Length: 310
Image (cartoon, rainbow, N blue to C red):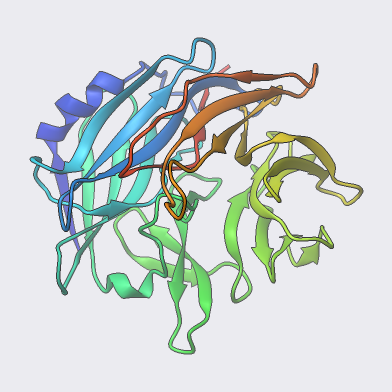
């Protein structure tokens, strides 16, 4: 693996920057921006990957090209972005090239001015479907010094393992075939196994679930079911439907949940409309943040929410 500091990209990504104090973001903290990955497919091997940010107050959206298209290095697909626990960086995985061997990379991108770190990875085929932006595959571990990522075992099982910021693969973290993991601040894991929501080996829902997201204090877990956002107590209990939508993420201050509402532009076409919304935990009202982000070849990832120090 090779680690590179991309100073040239730091200038472009700095257009997204928000000055953040060096202190670790506390939980619950203050709400920063919603962060997402967008992938625009220009044709075979010519996708453009950008990092977008949405203001949770005004809905103002801005983005910066990360790689692909006319930029260097090249990339054709990417994961959803995940925000570090201190709110200072995001991480995502990309893949480049048209034919094997593909170029896989881990990106650590600052949300405040600074250099982007690019870590070259090997054997991208061990990462099952990790290069789709429609799934939260890569997640920060609570300490902020490692990530979790799914790998494909020789037995064709999906194993969630630790991934160092230098690209080193560490120990297995969850049972086989656990997917869509999210980590509570105290280290508990919420994940999907056999289509059901689990917390540290305990099944929490009898019906199917997707896209779990912890509340800041770890008392609730938001998730998707059948085109709606639900929340269930992490200690167990009845799930409650909140609103229509998918891919929820809890606000750092615990008072709201952001999510997407997706549409399809044409029959049999899997990409199209995606708009960002916020659900108020107190008032139970939903507010649309952005108009639909449209592109026949544009894919928008689930959002993550940047925490700021209190």
